[in-house]
Length: 123
Length: 123
DNA sequence: CGAATAGGATTACATCCGTAGTCTTGGAGT
DNA sequence: ACTCCAAGACTACGGATGTAATCCTATTCG
Image (tube, rainbow over all chains, first blue to last red; front, side):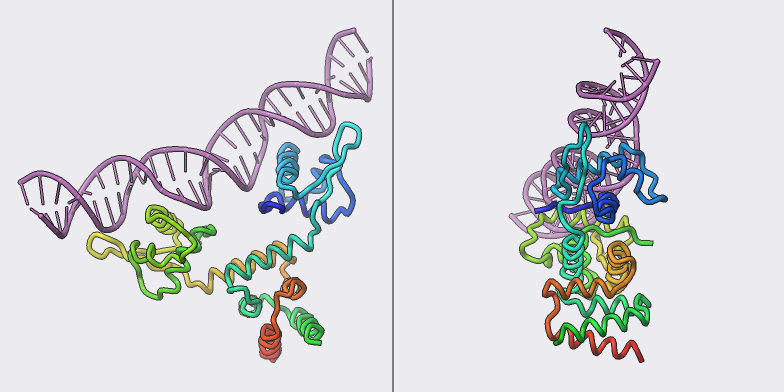
């Protein structure tokens, strides 16, 4: 039921997911990764939009709010992955991996990890 | 150098990629998949925007144009895949595959195909 | 020749997105 | 009590997007 999360909004979600606990708006502002120079107003806008989209919940704490994700990162990531695979690869994952491999996107470690994963899936 | 292609624009690109030859606007309109009910005006807008973005080229054919992709599908798809993996998995492909697998996104055929692919990559 | 038509060019318009600025209100401090 | 500030609420604004409508012009049909 969660509407799509935009690229900028995702940065806010990542802060909350990695915090693990509910944060105030000021906390979120403080934890936005450097390089993403946002004013506190901008972060507040993101929080409000994410609330409206149902991606966050908030509980009152005195006269401010504590925000926490309404969905686990796992679920978001799984959904986005599926969208991409459906949109570009007809729903099949193998061609995606092939593409990543082609662009030197897979290290030897990745390959080993994937092989282990596949072995497990097959059993 | 090509700007990002939006979701709706992608439908037009797909028509041109799968056609293999240059098409007129009317041809594109005729080949937009059913279910995507677009007026011909909408398709023309997409063509104009894709031209402006550098994703298409056109050549004159009498008083109309023949459109063809300016970039191969392979390249677009590779770029989008990389974006997703970078954005959500820190650039590593293995967790992506794991997620797809978790949601029953991988068939037995997929698994076999991936294993063959990995074996080849390792050598 | 004059009217209808097929194409491209230009314009429209609501919504979303990135990035804030302004308004309002309930404490905190003097 | 009055002032100032922090926090949330509401407003703004240009550019992208989805989805067309309108305008202009060359060509075709009667």
